[in-house]
Amino acid sequence: MVSILITAGPTREYLDDVRYLSNGSSGRMGCALAAAALASGHAATMVLGPVDVPPPDGAEVRAVVSALEMQAAAERAFATADVVLAAAAVADWRPAQRQQGKPARAAGSWQLELVPNPDIVAGLAARKGGRVVAGFALESTAAGLPAAIARGREKLVRKGLDLVVVNLHDAIGSDDSEVVLCFADGRDEALPRQDKSATAARIVAAAVDLWQQQRPKAADA
Ligand code: C5P
Image (cartoon, rainbow, N blue to C red; front, side, top):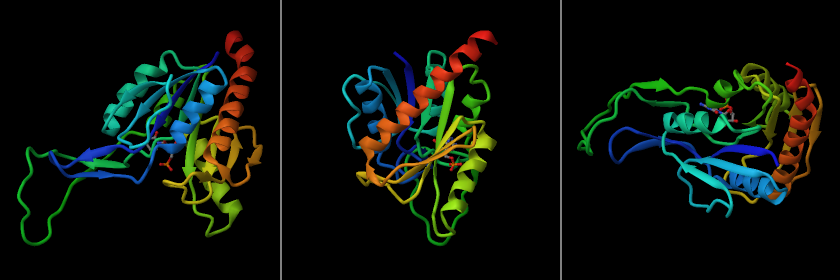
């Protein structure tokens, strides 16, 4: 049994007690990954932002709201994880300050100061040891498939990942997905456009395979 940590859903970065910045993300891929992990006899821990879809029965769920909360919960769960699948749509920035209550709407424009959020998966990958760490990259195919894969591969290198799942169409809220798995050893594996549960099953199997291949190396280190 492999212990699989999944980050999923969006994060919310509150400006005040009511307003927030976020990303469009249904959390469906993350829930499909957890369901696939459980169906294969693995343990699944989800660090889950605010979503409407229910996580699968049997997953251990840590509910979070902001990117900083997601980072703290993911770092805690990382200690006992073998494989990390970072499917969350983390907000890139958060307001520099959060105001109390709901300040009244004022006429005219106003400027909001944003500060960057930490890259959660890159932080985990930097101290992964024998773990396998996989990320997701939503890339437009407007410039062609090779360009989308190249952008995904750039993230794989920059974030220190073992695998990046390049999402080829805007799958937010959809039941379908069309992805290419880009492995750190240079292999690309294109999956057909199919139900997210079938895609999730292949992603989990690929990540677990990598973990099993890496185990002897990690034990020698
Ligand atoms: O750079 P980009 O946002 O496209 O990278 C997407 C991947 O990085 C996803 O796996 C996502 O979960 C992860 N990520 C993260 N923390 C961030 C931004 C992205 O873990 N602050």
